[in-house]
Image (cartoon, rainbow, N blue to C red; front, side, top):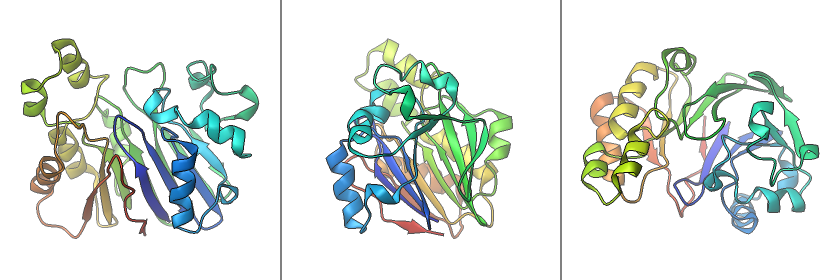
Length: 251
């Protein structure tokens, strides 16, 4: 399994997951041409991909979807409950409606129900052979049932959106601060660090900290908060950036 975040943040999100003959795109919040160029840097093209997974309807996760669907034969795999929030720009004919557990070829996928101010939002557990990826962003909290499903995975791409002090002392108006810290908002550095401490295990090789706020966080704060909570281990921790793809990591 190989994974690369192409973009991560409030201006656009996109990640690719490569599992030999089954390749996936998670979210399409960037332009078709940007993703095409990034794929070509890894000698990839859209005809090598099998599906698009969407986490929720917000534009920073979907604004490039219409263009991608017009220019490729790819289809979108979503729970049917999400479709109403996407129907203005997603033709039903391009959808495969999925259950909480499903397969795309030899890749197993499980939905993780998240808590965000979108009509319907999910994260994913993606498993191929004995390797696994958790992808969770845009959620105000993770309940115990979902957290238990996330334990002992190979790779975590998980949100560290804000530093709580920076957010409360920062430029956002009060209503927006309250939205971010609410149960339907975003995970803070501190909250994510505590979650990770509970769920990582001996099989965990990488943690990618995602969806950092440009106004209410820094890469250093996110990294240090998580490292301090996890203490010494052999896990490589990376930051997913808005304007630069991550390294292509492999487990």
